Image (cartoon, rainbow, N blue to C red):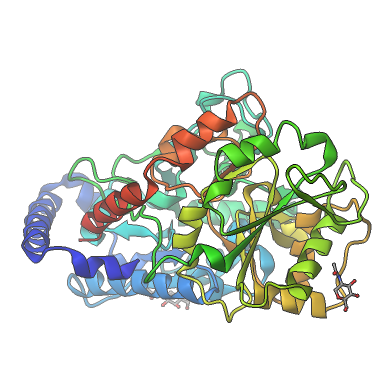
Length: 487
Ligand SMILES: *[C@@H]1O[C@H](CO)[C@@H](O)[C@H](O)[C@H]1NC(C)=O
Ligand SMILES: *[C@@H]1O[C@H](CO)[C@@H](O)[C@H](O)[C@H]1NC(C)=O
């Protein structure tokens, strides 16, 4: 995706840069004048930046670039550099990405010499001058939880239908815009974490779960919305923005290089398979339907595994074995989806261009199980699970298998890969639920790759609204917008 920047006509680039320089100059002048600024006169070195990075090489590269951008902008302002940490380097523990388990570490290490922990994603763009100015509005000796506020429009399964009477009341941060905790709040949360261990079994939507923890059923703190934390540059006062283009590194992966396996069973042949065919199946180079029943009109492949109502572990491992055993020698990627998954193969081809097929890649929407107490991360199956052949080879070379045919396949895979030291690579572009289950404001800065479930929606319409329409154009447009944000 960084290659895109080379294609920007340079007069435009200069125009944008000089506009930004003027803006910065204007804003630092305001900064001098402001009384509030003097009162909370924190220095850059009192901010600890934590980039929510991942260990896959593509993601490491992006996080390093953001770190350099923060350090370079800081060096232009001051001699005393802020601390910039990459989350994946901080701790080996599997649950580090859920942040809360790391708060004790932040409390011990930084509470003496820092005021804020500022978190951001690897695609967050930061204007250091504006960020400093924004944080100075808040007294760092008090407890603060700052972010760009999202709220549910309807109660949703991914939040366990929380606040179902009025889902709009509860605010949680859009992590893409960056978010911050003052040190007094970090210290308070640390005390709580020490006295009672984290209870929740599942980590599904981190941003909501962090906000719930901090809110503490009303005894804690709500999110304070900060208008300068942005995902899109609307006004000139944004301290942050988000690079929301679909990743593309070189050329999209060829469609012949992706094998798509659709898990189905006899009872869904009639209503779900026609929708797959009517929507995305035509984009796939290789696609097979795996069922408990051979139906030549589709056609389906009978894997010889009896259908199970709960999990599909037996079926999924049979698909993995078949992929390695048979044919597909030259096909580097396998994606396994449900028969009610809606996916854009064309966007997947863009995304996969950024990953190295020689590495064991296990990619999709990351969920966690029991991460407060060990546990593991996994790719939630409904949004689609993507594997490089190397990942499958290592998995099947191990002894790790289903404990029963009806075990949940995605969780068993997560457990196995975790045991093998192969991390889940998270992409928020895959979705375990339907578009209505996510805030519009959140989806507006995404080029989604998948959604899941037909319940109470028209799946064909959802596909054509969210996943199909001239995606190449949209991706290009988005990357141009992302690029303006970068500059
Ligand atoms: C604060 O202390 C930590 C731990 O000793 C250190 O790594 C960091 O550089 C210090 N920050 C500043 C601004 O001195
Ligand atoms: C794959 O090959 C192995 C070893 O030859 C065999 O035991 C297994 O049954 C095969 N699996 C499938 C699904 O073809």
